[in-house]
Image (cartoon, rainbow over all chains, first blue to last red):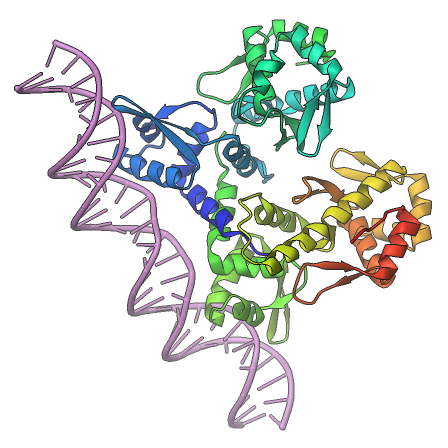
Length: 230
Length: 230
DNA sequence: TCCATATTTCGATGAACATCGTATTATCTA
DNA sequence: TAGATAATACGATGTTCATCGAAATATGGA
């Protein structure tokens, strides 16, 4: 058993500082233009273009052309998950400032993972949904039970609509700060979008950090029975 | 959240083909001489020496000197676990030959992870031990219950002796083919050694593959209630 | 003491590759 | 149609780094 060529190809791409910065920027799951990414990585547009074409060749990102602009995004959830692994493999903390430390704590608590919720709260919510019998774990997927259908509809999440999407409906996504699974896939995204609609959570502009609003504290308590202390 | 410098340092080390080969060779948890590793990686001793000193600097391997020889080993279980991640991140299968395919299956079924058992059988055994109340999961550790103490003693594993070792007693080790935890640490190793003593499993010379003997099939059935089909 | 073996040190070489300047293509706007 | 902006293409440059030859160091055995 050796390290798979595909993986070394991936790590080679990741090891380069500029590319790592670009990929980290794309971890929000949104589209970004080439220039924007060049600016973020502090390199000239040509260089960014060079890197982006490499990333595209290796199916790490996809590109959509709109007029003069090229919008880049992570290719899929699988890529985001893999990057999440690399970003969070446990390593000596090496916290410099208090600010950094508290930001890390907030990220561990609640953050986005591609297009759904991750971190402690996401793992807790997933556990609650399992315990209450709304979902069941089957291999690497979660299955929505009859009881669950009622719960999600009550919450305002359109299960039927979501299940029609081509992407995996509700796969178990490994959470790297918590080292267990949380809910990903279309259902994970559906819930995430709904939490925002309900004003339970708020996303920060240039960060993967998620803030739980006062409204959210009440909502999560009412619907999930989850007490949020901080 | 960006990719941690420590991680890029690690991936940089891993990306290089010769070093990856050396590390893969060391995944058996045993000591190997510098020349031996040079030969395995098809490079001259000087080059291997160069790589090994880099790996040592980065605390991935440790070195013990005996006479003219320098014996290298992975620094610790943590390193082995991290490597295990890289080796098994799911990637397009790309199986070339039947031989390769069946070897992969055997590895998924039973292999060593550093110095304990991993793969499907290890996960199954861990689940059984949990279900029977021999161990309990607490965070990233497994705790041996009173019932468990009796079970392990009955099996011939010296719990008291093992718990005196300085290494972590029984941590939950992420299994990358199964995507769940199995039992690692001193207890994981203790069981592994005991299975070999009992003749239940056999390790192959230059592979991480583990073979379950006929004696083992009977033993695992008797003590764990585990049916091994193949 | 002398030679063989294991390993490291040093220096040279060559290949891989990120970066950017210049130029080109594509698209939008006035 | 002309100028501005977004992005890519190409070529030159410089740096990093794996590799190996040559030589040095350390140890074991005869």
